Image (cartoon, rainbow, N blue to C red; front, side):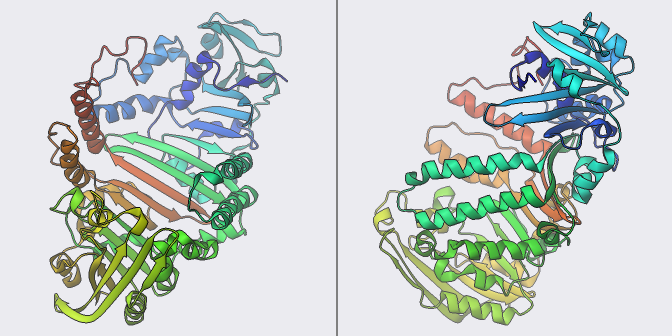
Length: 585
């Protein structure tokens, strides 16, 4: 059977654009078009409702103030097929088979239509060799079409179309393979792609091959440790190929912003399914961090089975025993021992008035919740007392001190600690930019406090008791931040991990540094909501969500254009004449 490289045909890409059109969120469940998609397809791109796209995507581009030449509906009309499509139905691009090495595959597009004859007639279609197949030419490429239920099946390869049965009855198979995580992804996405887990096996082999070919490009690396870690990663991929039932990624647009959702589902009863049975409550851990602008903030609920398994994986991988880990002090600290006594962790890095070069993480605070805070504090004390690491291979040495009851913070006893890192052969105090100074605001390394409070232990990375006090006393909480709450509402519920990136505070730190490099001043917007990321478990599967607010995208585009113009790259306002050849979206 003749195959066709997926990236060859511009015409098919134009028609397959039907499956790249982004729509409003689907109702709970799966799009009807999946009923006609073979359950063993290599991959499928699915759209739930073509008609809703024109409204919701335009709401998004309107929110970021990016004018477009034509709307998606107008683009379809320009192709001459807008009136023949059922804009209130779902569409799909089906990759029937795909060979990674040759980049060849067979695919069929299912376009919903109210009138198949009118659709193909728009292109002056002729008989395509019998079996109800029509053929027409667009931009010198021949497209074959046949009717499948309420859809027109389109393909650049006649044999692929003949072999495509187009029989209904597959929807229940997809409901089973998607599981709760996949169905949640589909119902919260405008367009999504699902990949057959068997397709990941060649990818794992390719990753291993590339690692073996490039292993010599990491001087000073522990080859044995790296090989073990690579084998563990490959083992995880192989396990998913064996035990996984689906992997999918979806996107949703709207006036509030754009979100991406990844779902991974495992076959019932497998080890993978057992890791993703329970949800979590990482959001409550954010309540233990002080309020205020932040560079980044995250929280992890260690009670989730997958969180516990991840730490076991770190321990078994030998990462804490590698030369790099010992050289950085991680081996001496042994985070896996600390993890045993933590029920969760939250951390945030706050802006430093000294700027980017004065200690990027000097104002970082970590909170570790625990069923036994006294035991956790004693573990910290043991690990930070008299640390003595000397790694001659990397030219690094680390020493530490620990002082119990050094001071009082918000009426609580605070233990002091300090870690001195000598960079040796890697430079350090003799360098123009001391890395320890840039990271922790001290030429030696982190020095801060441990405070037992609120059912856990706080750690600071500088002697800044003023920052710790509001959190220790419970006077302010990052969990009450309205911007975080808005972003979090667009992430999966019952999260066991979440992460937020504060772009405005980051830019406040970076822009002055860029000014030193010759970039003119940039007027930063007063509000740039954070980017959010969250992970949740759903009955044998995982849901990973990301949300980027439209206001932040708009600001980032304006800043990028200003910077581009400053360095002679153009920039300026959107130019509606930039693209006269077709839709600007």
